[in-house]
Length: 219
Image 1 (cartoon, rainbow, N blue to C red):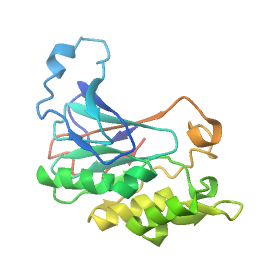
Image 2: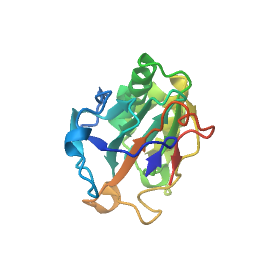
Image 3: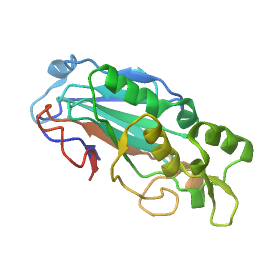
Image 4: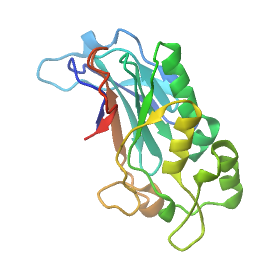
């Protein structure tokens, strides 16, 4: 789970149908679904936001959710309380989904954007076709190239995310450096064809509390 700052209780959780692309969706500013779905003492049902791979919000009463089982989940925050959740597979990384999410935050007034990476598959477990690796490296640089434990070409997703954040002027802060394929305790589609998914939840306090010096933090 990921939180950005602290503040009012979350009343609405938005989720998306992920398609490994670069579409960024913005949720309603006032959380228009919250009042109708609040039932004292009961969890709030998630609200479907649409099809895409990143969500951006500014309302402290909402949370954003993305699901992963090897792809990267990225939490983004800003001092103004504008925040985002990103699902970044290799196709989305190459298509610029992180830059799109950061741009959407800035268009809504975010200044200093920080990002933190969630658990994802690491290079030692992610052998990758050279042609596809070249496509990613052409966009995100040679840092995206890695090697498996056997020495074969691999995609380094954490390095690719770092490069994407740097290239759009966002600062990376500590996330959760775990490989979903081999660390244990995580779902991995590539290693075990798991049906389950990790859920990354991102929410924010108001603009006074969202400017935590460490930025997004995983817990």
